[in-house]
Image 1 (cartoon, rainbow, N blue to C red):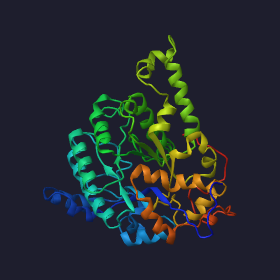
Image 2: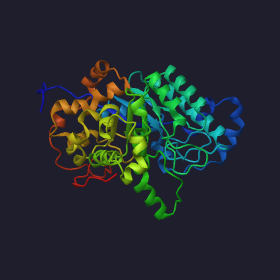
Image 3: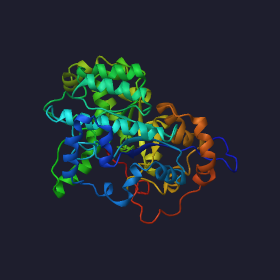
Image 4: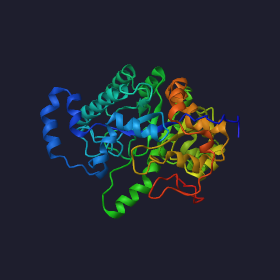
Length: 411
């Protein structure tokens, strides 16, 4: 189990998957004044499609004191922040909205910038405990690169939230295009972690009952595509120090997914094979296998890690896994994060728990682990508590961590 803990030792817990955003009208002051009149009209007419963003608990997204109190009670001392609420001029959340068309871009870009500026202020309210991700759009790389520099200079330490490009987008090149090389180079120059969250690249789907079901099943598939897009585009070959994080997309799929990518890569290298016909030119430019790039450049944001996913951690790499609570989403572990950790980590060696709960995240996102340790000594979960097997799941929780079925999702 690794080094024996002292009786009062506590784990430092960093969640690499939190969501935050302003109340809709509070974005107004972060918009350039030229947008105010149009924003007022849009906000007056907008009907929020998400019930959790209009109910009384929605303020967990923007109420700094409430958020800190609930997370500390849950044993969490720091978090990486992704967007959640509706930014100006968006039809729905930024996580689930497809990349805009050229005509939609100016208004959406103003909305993204408003969110980034709000988030910088929100992170400043809890120094060292929040690493905000910088949102960008891909329609104008000069704009995107300038925004990365702004975010870096204004304390958004969570890196960039890389959007996905849905198949057949009318105005944008796919992520494997050489067009994006200036973006990768800028991330390398600025030492920015690249994050690819669930929801990236989802194409427009209708909201019929079957359409919603299909969207739920396929959301991870479109998000996963960023991994092999960047591998076969040679991004990690050209930029060996880049960090790429796949968050809230499941974890267990990598146990079979990485060997599958290696299989394709191997077949692409066989002279005369059908796979070489399609992928040989790309594979020939790579000095490592896909799984080797993953082991060097990539990480998985393991939101509410399921027990079966933890069981295959050696097939993924313990040093590649970072735990996340997904606060304040209903499928997240709060307010039962201690129980979620017990469900998955009770029999895991202490040193491996420390890596998955804090040390890897601190390295990837630049958290001050020594400073967070002082806070964790007051609010963190006791080591002996986490290693006490959970006897029963919390009643009423829909968190994915409370799932004892031995099923590894295929994606």
